[in-house]
Length: 214
Ligand code: TYD
Image 1: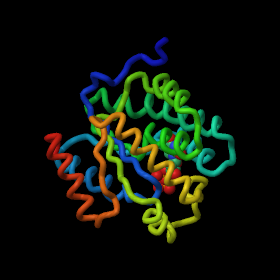
Image 2: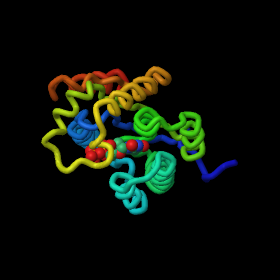
Image 3: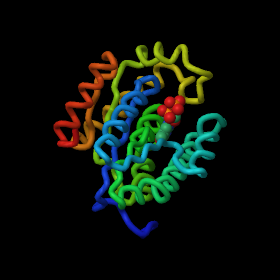
Image 4: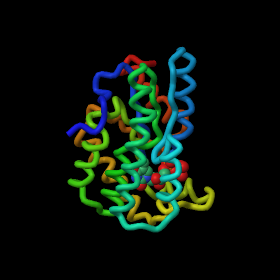
């Protein structure tokens, strides 16, 4: 059964996602990559999950702040993803844009699968239904110990339902991310995010050089 008119498997754009536990410091490095790509004259679509469309942003508000069971949570985030993919990501990839997305399906495997203990088989099925073959070309996984991330977040604003979880939850999330990376090593670039901003930036730059994108 096909749910959409097309897949971005052969699309000319480049899809890059940024993942890691809360407090891993993705945002600064997304800003830097966005500026670099724009300075090369490329079209960049900067977006995030859950979110990225008016509907998905509404679902994000519910997802982050309203109490719900793990199945509801999972269905909401994949519903938001479906809208985001069909309205924003796939059209951008088809016209050759670079899509930089703050979190994507690896976060569902990490947070709902690892953190909440939700069934991975169901997550795999949802991934196939919702994405129909669209996968990131590259995923930066910002890896660091939950204690270091928690210390960085300590001064942050009022925590959402995920940021409020304990260290054990984030240890499971981290491990689930690392498991995804082990399963799909060709797609992931593992970044040691406990280093200084300059050192993290040079790890990213090395990956871009390796890909021939710098
Ligand atoms: P993020 O945008 O990184 O949070 P912030 O705006 O606070 O920096 O991510 C929002 C939260 O949603 C984050 O705690 C992880 C969670 N999340 C999931 O649990 N599953 C998912 O599939 C996604 C995309 C995010």
